[in-house]
Image 1 (tube, rainbow, N blue to C red):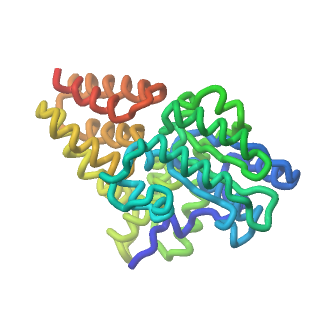
Image 2: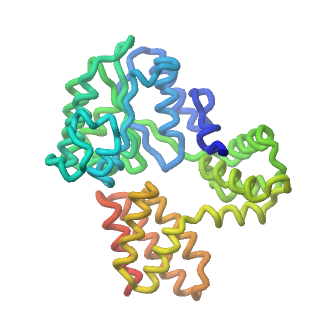
Length: 342
């Protein structure tokens, strides 16, 4: 079985993280000061926010960092709901059942219970423990207010790291509780250098134009570049990889559910469109913005007339804007699907 390269080459230390020098330098200073506040990492997807949080914990606590680090993905709680709660064995004792139908409390109430319990647990051989909440923009308003109170209550023994691609969705009292650090995609030069190092380690045959095409496609997104490179290497084993092979590999990245969503939208089938939106969010775990980007690629590659494609792209752009302010990604995506029916 092949290793997933996005996992294999994920940075394990702060020194290995590319780009975002100012934010990484600040994290290093906070670790040395032994006076770390709550932190809020914000920026686009795949910019190193989660990698930085795990590297920070590893640097503070060593190889046994998981004893003092609790990780939660807010989108799992509030987009998958009770079905997710019963799948995560950490919560069995708290919810008391493995049947989602027997959970009589709301997901928000259970989330408060879980975070409060984990925050109340003392650290192991450390001054404080870390609770890392990824995709914090998925937190409902009530949950954010509860989280703010928990952060205040357990400041002496617990630090929170919140990661989000949409900081505007966090309430002001919550944002004010943490030091905000911004993350962005890496430069083309740094990405090309990193890709070249993987090429050498994996023994891949790729020409300069192939690397340039990969960097152009990735647009600073390291995970996308690494994933595309692995697909290209599998498709062209022991063969030279050039721009055409990179392009062919990007087509393989398209989710079948995105293509079916597009087909449902242009065939004016709202029920089918909703089904594929749910599949993308719940089964594939994609964010609203990731779905929008994939849908944009499908529209661009369609054989529809230019004026129709331009109209669709304008609607996608409007939805992309609404997603930055909305509290429910599914509603915005369904609204986009409805616009295609007009």
